[in-house]
Amino acid sequence: TATPLSSVTLSGPNGQLCQTTASAVGSWSCNVTLTAGPQTLTAVASNIGGVSTPATVSVTALAQPTLILAPTGPQTNTS
Image (cartoon, rainbow, N blue to C red):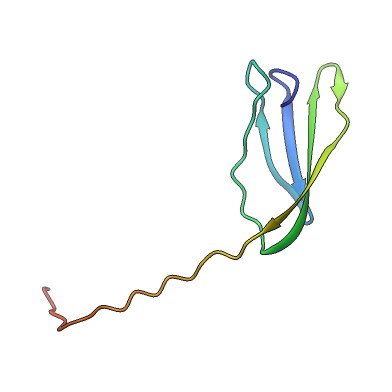
C-alpha cells in the first residue's frame, strides 16, 4: 500500500514500468510485462509531503507459454 491518493511509480531493471495513483485507502496496481527470469522491482510513492522510502521486491517472471493451434480433419475454405 501507499499513502492514500499519492502517485506511485513502479520501476524495473530497464526503467519505469508504470505510474499510477493510489486509492483513498492506499491500494494500487499496475499491469506490466516482464522478460523471463529474475527481476527486482521498486515502488516509490510521492505526494505533496515528499517521496517515500523505496519498497523493493525480487520476483522471477516466467516465460509466456507458446500456443500452437493445429487443426485436425479436412479444412474447408468458406470464402
